[in-house]
Image 1 (cartoon, helix red, strand yellow):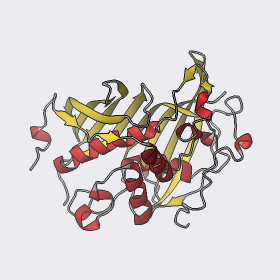
Image 2 (cartoon, one colour; image 1 turned 90 degrees about the vertical axis):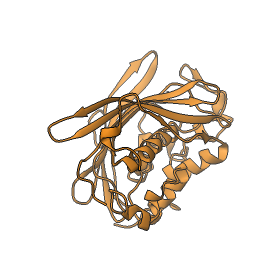
Image 3 (tube, one colour; image 1 turned 180 degrees about the vertical axis):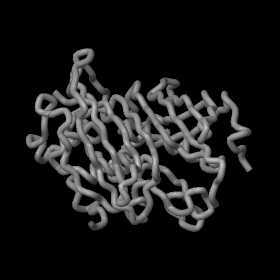
Image 4 (cartoon, chains in turn orange, brown; image 1 turned 60 degrees about the vertical axis):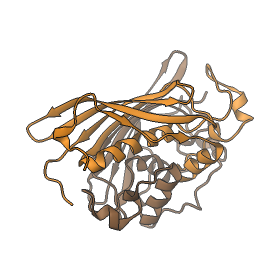
Length: 148
Length: 160
């Protein structure tokens, strides 16, 4: 039985499941999320420059990385009775087909208020080249009277 | 209200691209046109599988009943799909070349099968930073009881 709020400590680490991005996972994410922006499919389109930014090919959805971050949070929180309440993400680098991304988090704050018990997390997502592709912050609530 | 029609969704974002507001035309505060969408177990399963999230909380009612949620819920990130499902083909978030810079989301009531979700969305402002055209936008998703499922802000770089 994983630890509940009392056993969780600032500095505790979360390891997400590595996710290998491919053209197929990008297609699958598009069909699920309905985001069919040509940034994710059209090699010819990606030869152009976007403002000041040039990509070296089609890129994965930023929200695909976001979804892997929220996945890590729910997978970790659910057996501990925590509810995912907030997720903030900033994209640092594009993710390309062939990259394997892995979210990680650390518990940065543990706070009790008059009516709640709260956890704050700092997140990073790295690719398999050791580069940070996204950073974020999350918050969870740990109700003390769990159903189920 | 009917179940979301996946097959009817226009996947070609170039089609009608000329009808969408450019950065110059976006009016801060103006509500985007939206339609409510009803979630079903099938919609939730399809979303969870498509984004690569195998947690049985989203597909297995027997398992989900043993969790604090008491039944199947949608992944918190369901707002990604709902933003497109609830908006029309001429919505400016479909503009090819839209690049996501940052997102900040707050999760309240979980979305469940049978919920009809309504989106209220608008651009808060548009600005230029480091030579790039940005929009900051805010979306709130309500269920049929008027409870907030989730709300969030996004910062996107708009195509020139």
